[in-house]
Length: 352
Image 1: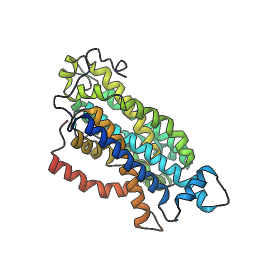
Image 2: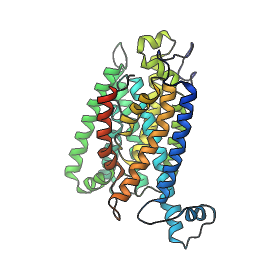
Image 3: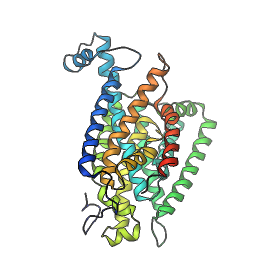
Image 4: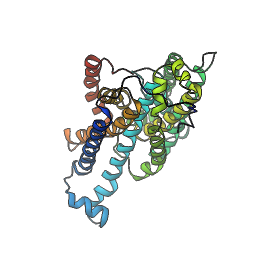
């Protein structure tokens, strides 16, 4: 990965050492992975229908299609959990990459217009070709998110200085504003687009089953693996463009590759689940508060914390209004706001 991002000298390291040292951070990461395993099991077990561990085993190893409990596990909760797991990892890693590469602790997937691009593409598709299946929306959303990232980066790259963090933030804000104006104009005139948009915009794992997972998993898995190997380059970019260049990082090339990774991760995650808030913004902050400024550890911890938070919010949404359901995007918004305020207040936005 380092050769891809054109790092020609020794890998840049953050000035402060990671908090606690590698052995302690490794133990902490292992414990978090164990906790995530418990959360995954809870995501499969808990819901409006009570099932046991034995039902899960039979659903996976000795499936009986006549068993309602096994069908719920195999066809609904397992794919839903896997989508939450992969999308959570993707959104968390995207936020961490954006915060380091733009040197903006408040950066999230929305800074590059990802949410706006995906939403605009879906609304335009509904207006032009009418109501379609969710799997069709996935591809429109994915393409729209990718186009938005390309447009934002192209605008920010104009001029002698190239795509600086400030220009990226301004270009992202401008493009997002334009896209949401387009969305508003369409949904006001098209009731069908408005109804579909309301369902997608809230952010949800409900109704996302095997077909959605099969279409998005290749992008989410491959993109996440590549993102996890970008920590050394992010360490350089987080120090500033001049310092990164002095350490041998080709800043422009690095940002292009990193934003391509973000486009893939966010495009697939947003298209599958809708614009999920909080994860890409606050979870990397929490990871930095735990491990320090070394992005190799930040990315690893973010990749474990983000899906855990996503699945916990999904479980809470299933149980709190049972037999109904509260969408995961709503739960994350409610739970995430005070947590993020606490990070800002007591951790001073964990230093990049």
